[in-house]
Picture 1 (cartoon, rainbow, N blue to C red):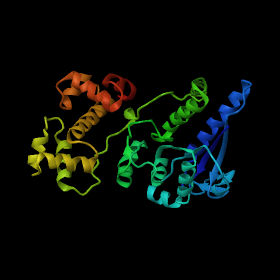
Picture 2: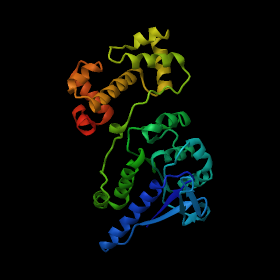
Picture 3: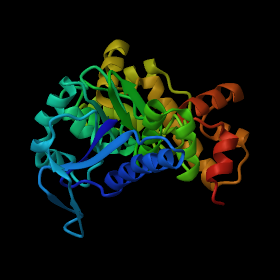
Picture 4: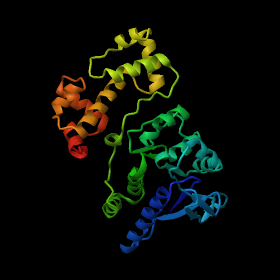
Length: 322
């Protein structure tokens, strides 16, 4: 039987504590109805026996405190509310416990911005991790040594898992059920809980942020120029000349400041403008393409799908509100 410890964090989000507990325990119920033994031994584990959440609106009673858990196989790190640095400070006592059990053979899974606590252990250095796309810039700032892949719904590397944002954590739970209980059980859970199985990308949900939380003024100037003139053909050499930097220096500093290459940033700005138009206007796809500065329909569609995971027409059909 696989021992699962779901952490009850201070400032934890109740849904990402109760949700995994519900799905894992339901697997046991399904198995028992089939005449099979349960496979998950699920426990809520906290720093104290009771943890108030949401300014005391809720309270979670844990079955164990961390000092009472001698061995566990899988640690679930739920999402947290509010200011991440404050939340990390409140939950510092979990970090040596998580490290100790990982080194003893436990696997780790962070849900949404639970990735911040997971990264604080140092165990993610050089490894892939996802988080909520809205927290990606802050995560990169705090943990530059982690290979953040915010477009991914699920990552799996060396016994460490992470999920994308908000309720996409359920996709990670289904992924873990598939891994530990088999595909048949994962499909059953996806049907019962109505979770879209094997969804791989957060792309359709990501709203591109301008990433100006840095102090490199020439790069900010280049970003502002791109955002004001995205309909035009903008070259790296043109930007380098405008901010009085060599092309190589511009590209190096741009990547460091924004986590994008210059070309990627131009594409992301254009695609974000196209998304907004597809959501709100009645222009056809070609009209939107020309409006944001593309002239090659194939290039536009390929770039759009790479960024969002959907074709322009699929995106319009899904999100247009006009």
